[in-house]
Image (cartoon, rainbow, N blue to C red; front, side, top):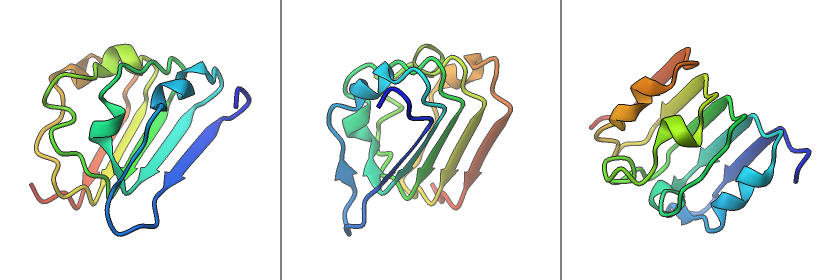
Length: 116
């Protein structure tokens, strides 16, 4: 796991899946990209995560719920090197965390097909 550079988590079920022990990914020092598909983000943001080298994160058809609005995850601390955020078809996305503005390396923020 410490040699991984890209991680794609895809749920082929009808309902969003919950992921546990997501904090273990912080131990992978070379992980640069994560793509989550049909995942409940509330389960990920329960515990603080820290991925210092992560450069790109993508959410596709994920259940955002209130995961970001409760302040349980601080983007600038969890992903300080983040350059690219892609959010697509996450229909229950209401707001992004305010601290996303503190990501000094962020070059691209793409939000598409999120109707709320």
